[in-house]
Image 1 (cartoon, rainbow, N blue to C red):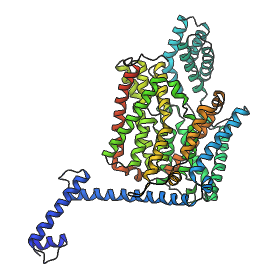
Image 2: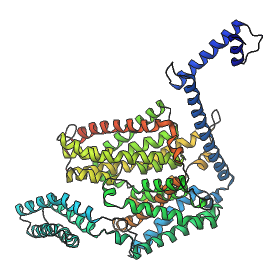
Image 3: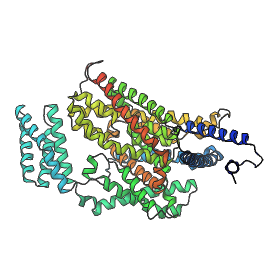
Image 4: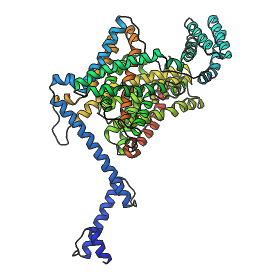
Length: 592
């Protein structure tokens, strides 16, 4: 067989094909290959084998998306098949609302009206070495307090600060903790506001760290409190599964194992060093869940307790209680301007970049909300609003937390190196770091003023979670219509709309405008603890139903690139805004 005949066979042409026909076919296929390269954004000299591999990857991603779409369509049909009354107590969305709001109602009755207390399991622990490191790091601050107290005539405060200094020299953990508590009490009576605030923080820090022993976390009492939580959440889950028609028996047998993994994750995240680096519990929940699912595997009888969305939606309704509209008013004019300017510009910039990198809309929405608003919480709320893939949520959560650590360490160093004004530095930290805890930690490394400004700006951004979730819910409801089809009716929009968003907004409005300050103060800590458990169970579930390769293969690295570039832009844009708003350029520097 000569070369021409072989070519005819490769091209699928008959032996009767002429030489001109063969040449025309070769040119046609070469042109098609060139067009495919251009469409994929590949160089013109990319080998055909590489083009083929890229097409296979795209096909696999498309099939995965179609599979997810099919799952959502099945769920939507099931929910649309319910009557409106049935949906109120059988759909996962409505159940998330009722469970979250029910827990809030019980908390209001139990804690504010009865005055009873609530003992939550404790997970914070500090080793002996970590405690001594904390003593060494804080010693210069204690020296400053002594000098300032002496100069300002704060006799009682001076006495307790010197007593603390003496206890620190003895290296007796119990004595240091007791001295720290006395300093905290003395600080409350101090007249100088700045000195009072500094001494209170230092005293409370020593008192808390001294008492955070690993033996307490593993004590019988703490385990008993954890069992109470397990029983309560198991009871809630049984009710939810029964109403949704899920296998209650398997849920009962599988839930304790999901709970234990979540408990271990909270224990690991409670360590002093890990907490200082801002590594949140959700990361450990995800990692441990992934380790289980990718090593020993998750048995079928346990899977009915792996209910990611059930846990997330219930937790998000409770989260609404911490998103207070009143914070915007307290933050002041400048805090509102920066929050709106950062969130709107950075969100759109990240979305635009994701589109340029061919990242799908669902992924783009989660990345944009995470980088622009407040990291993990915003990503969770967005995932619920757009009915996002849990694998993508775990991807976004992981990259947010990994990026937060170097930023929390480097940004205070940079601000000091360039002699950045404290108010500007705080506004910069608050607009870029993704959690309130990391803002507090990084701000404290600069000054008390930087910390206050940072927290104010961060809380202003946090308030926008609900608004963003609501807008995205409406947009995605309309996106659910088939291309070329008529616009969905109002009733269809209502069915598709994620009802947990209504619960989130209801709890936020309740705590913002209807409850008194004493009531909020009495129940905010217990509610936050219950919220943490819902999210811990959710991220453990994500890990248990995900394979490592599923996450690694998502988007071919493009979502990570989009996030990192958007975060870099966020750092620069927020710094410019911080100087303009808090640096005395456009407005007088604020006083906190």
